[in-house]
Image (cartoon, rainbow, N blue to C red; front, top):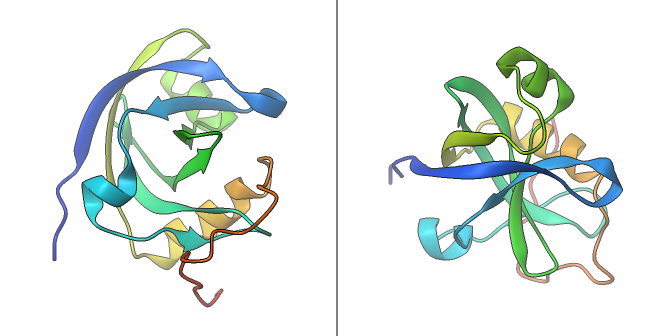
Length: 127
């Protein structure tokens, strides 16, 4: 089943631990009818591919404290000339690629993990 990109505008904000993110205005499980992947430690999220201001990226939609977010790495901010407070155009869709999963795994490791793992998160083989 092909899932079309979901588009939205969002402000670039500095989140917990200095991580720069955009807040995702929808629940990926409801939007895409997919369970999250198990990521680093007890973390989970939805691996994605998309664009921010038309610059491509692989990453994930994370979930923490009842909110959904996408990390915007320093290299992406520099390439797009973005600073905290800018409004960006996001187009994103779930991805089953190994590249997106590996990027999600790496990015998730810098976020605060929940006390318990989400039991229905889907484990995926690495590499």
